[in-house]
Image (cartoon, rainbow, N blue to C red):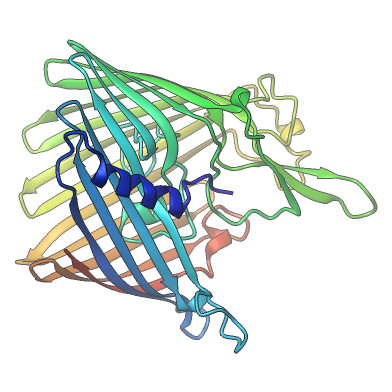
Length: 405
């Protein structure tokens, strides 16, 4: 369950900001209207999603030392609405804040309180240190707000030249959104002792930007366990604590950028004795960007994941199958300005061990000032049981028309 501020709370928050007697700058109001359609080509072009979204954005200043921002989504999805004659006309409607926070500024630090995105790391799509905002694999699209989930958090940045220290506290756990083949789920209780937190120290050496980070929280995907209440075991998933120590860097040389990111994950199975819990492991990404012109950007990355305390005999006791000790995969991204007002983007991830892959591709046309159309597709494939192979029938073709104001 997502712990997001209620619509009533958010609207009252905006109204109070507009009416407060303190020196509040007039609110800037903007947003967009988008109509979208997603069909599954594997199922007679069945509609996965089809509807419209209204996003309202509010931002302004609270004197010289504070500011606020809120983005509120009104989503109507006719493909997921009930079409019964007895259904409410609001069936298929969801309302939620994408972000809603207050910024506080001081001479040495900035603070942000509320629903927000906190992205760590330097690499693309595969980010070992980017563990604060969960992924929504059920709603991947051309916009990051669809496939990343904001969290309620308190964060601060302290400027201690040449270092920037960022701290973050997240009181509620939010899991990744993806299909989980279990009968039930065990999630952390909403208690202070289960809060997540992290710290990141960033600095530079000449043209090299780098950071060190630590994060304590929960794994976004559950450990799959089973209970024997009869001849057929009952499967359940449990979200377990994890500590992540991270390092990332980026440096540029002309048209090239070289970057890397690595995270050591200390899981609950520190000695490798539990076949149902992920072993401690280190995930490392090395990549480079090439920008031969202002119209073209290319990215290629190699990903290596290595498990410690690995015993194949123990791991094979897991009925879901023994994971490999190490895996290699690659991630690529291409952005191309095809012509004036028309751009193309391709993102792909391929796992060499399982032979499975994911691809997101889309063409964007800026039809007029503030008016854009996007045509794209999602493709999943791989052996049965592999991460992307499980979604092999979830391919989608989508079309979106967006008007910003």
